[in-house]
Image (cartoon, rainbow, N blue to C red; front, top):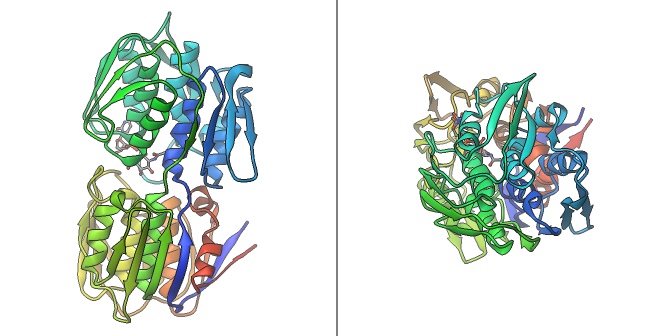
Length: 419
Ligand code: UD1
């Protein structure tokens, strides 16, 4: 099994390009199920989760053609079965995103129930309730969500509590082909929801309000394929910026969309980093001084993203001063704390808050990746630790970071993939 070996202590300098956003690519690929003609998706990141979604579509008999430039063409006219099997769903919970499109287009879907998850229970009740509200009959049988509808789904008023990103996306997709108007209240405002809506609008959907907490969708009778480029990955960009705030140096990230990173940028500025940006680039300059500790609380967009929480725990572990990091989105998203503690970090947990005492330096150690963003925090810790850090189970990192060791190497890090 692959591991990452990092010798800490290098300052990061240079320029890299942001990859396409995983959390935008996944719903957009699922949306291809709604179209009567092929959908072309560009700027797809080369990630295990994207491969899993393509495999999932392929396993249903959908024709998926991938070009060298990671542009994919998805043609659903050859679809044979409407079944998302457990083998694939268990490796990626976002597989639930095919539920809405399958029901809306084919009036039937079987999606394996995702099991437990490293970051909390993560139920899918909101997805199921929403499909029922739109007229579907949904039963749980043999570990599967079995859903069907007579005729088209019906527009409905859906109120999310709590706000759910993929839940909102499933409803937008289902409602696009439903009969009548759907109103989503307390909708997720994440930029990836806007990206999905923009793709669906290109396909012929009638969607208003994406990016606000009320989204209104007038169902249409058919959607066609289109050509769409997914937005840059704001979590990937945020992760590299945080790395530089920890190591020092100057790094420019091109193909970025800084307007979606406001909460992260504000916190990085409080660490002492200087941030400059234009429409499609962002640059961080961190002098030789250590970062100052910053406290934060995660929340749905536009609050500080839970997907950047672990990286900031690493930053605070070596920062000047004490801080608290409070997680409000997921119930158990602190698996990285024990691993950072193995590297000498002084962190204690009280409920959903990590209390962090900044120390001078971490010590390299063998550590284990437990989930996607937790693994990123261990890479960041390894970059500033004294001596070698070996990160095991990096298949978690490969789910969400494209060529992480290559990008970091280009910036001057001493990092390699070993087996
Ligand atoms: C998405 C992102 C993930 C991110 C998360 C929060 C994708 C593919 N993944 O995940 O990277 O960390 O948003 O920004 O876009 N909940 C329920 N019932 C449900 C659904 C959710 O109780 O049916 C709860 C969850 O347990 C969690 C909260 O709602 O506490 C928010 O989760 P949600 O926004 O749904 O996360 P995902 O869409 O799975």
